[in-house]
Length: 160
Image (cartoon, rainbow, N blue to C red; front, side, top):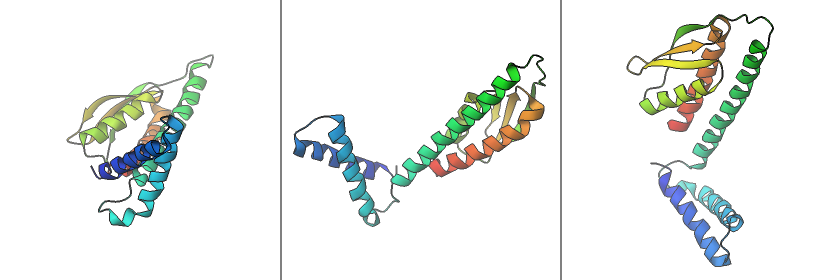
């Protein structure tokens, strides 16, 4: 809830800017929003909570990380599947997570499942354990674990 006040104030500034320009379109709203963003940034020390732009940047980093990991895993899966001889060892392995809340664990599970080649099969949120099915368990175990750590750090940055 820490960004709500700043976000609402920024939206109010954008609407006031639209009213003053007597033009109701997305471009004018975007300009007003950018002006409001700069004003709130300059006045950030007067707010009890931290500047909400940090959360927006963290969310953008998480989305960018997901897109990069999605592209990398898609290329790897495509290369494995298009070989003349399918040489994979599917398997299930256990991985622990440092995330605590149900929402954080669910977000991690969704991000890992959406990347090709791996699926979260079971979650034990009390123990912080995920059971993952990988298309090629021998190769993927280290890669999925590294990817999960990257996602965990980005999720922590966004949520906490």
